[in-house]
Image (cartoon, rainbow, N blue to C red; front, side, top):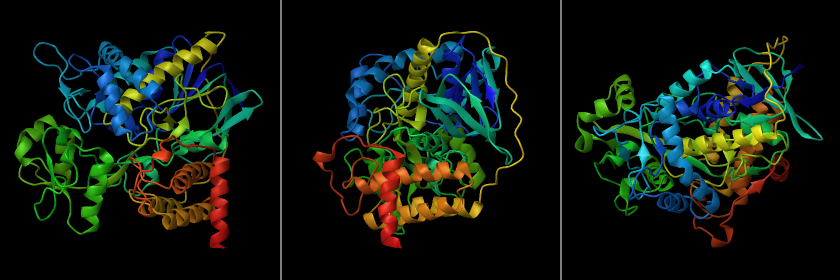
Length: 519
């Protein structure tokens, strides 16, 4: 066991690093499963950050679009607060050195994405916003004397007492080891979402719901776990994770066609390719199921400019032997963003004392049932600052702390690759873009078996906890709304226009009742 006066931040993406900087001069310990910048979802974000920067756009219009996309369950107070401060965060990131796209006069280049009523997404070199923002933050964190970073280290369990969360158990991420307890005055969870729980995902390999799961196992309340966003246009080229064909391409006029050359979105929604993500995702999924391979066609809209304006897309195409100037890009639906997570209030506080959460691991009420494009990075920034300020206000001292050097005992067990594959395939098959009661019940039964078989692997148990929460909440919500679509309840029920609140104990009770039917 190690005692530290440092605030422990679990995760090393945008929210984690931004919060670490905001906490200065309070000493901070960042728990990073990989070297900084590698494996964080934030680094892979292509679209940008949504913010109403100039008139005639406004925070009020941005909030209204956020609520429309969220399908009736967005917290209006949260939407108003986040959109009101969005511009401040763009200016602060610019001051830190983020090279956002600017025109000749120095104005930010604003771009429009799906379900936005105005061009309000700030980007870096077309599709490199996440990567460049992360590089800016990494440089600042490396230079910050108050921040210690433990790389190749994984949080596996929270320690609690009568006063709330008192510590974090960590193990090595690059090799099996026994866990070590770090006692700390405060914990901020900023460790990403759950996309990697699915067999087809755009998320980095390590992002598999572990942070949400360890909070749930400690007793934290979850919100909206059933709402998973599936990105419509992941590259369908056989890679895992699936590279992302950014939504910005459709914002620039790229269209969706099938093998027959038909624009299948035209009869589906008035906004066609710029319809909300859940609608586009289900349409693409339907084309795939029908054997008409969906493709993203940039030829007429961008021509050769796709190579210079979207270098990440161009690199992926080159790797797959696709020439986007002359050929359409094969695409498929992939798990992309989890609207649900650990419930957080306006200050980023969870239901457990001394535990805060920000970023995709949280559920703040901003996204509702369906996240508005490019609101993810924005939410991470806003709640990282809110949580950091709240933590700092509650701490009694800013005294410097010595760095810690944990020694990990021999132990632990490697992840069972077969069990992980079964888990991911189960989630895709039964808890994916289209769901029904039979499939969800089958998924819960499989999850119970897998968890029992792998009970000694806490990392895997954390994944199973999050997967169970998603499936149980999806079974309980007997309607279709936003990213949650039930074939057996295809209509939206106005009586269910509220957020889900659920604990792991409640989800396990649902799972136990399902198990009885499978025995």
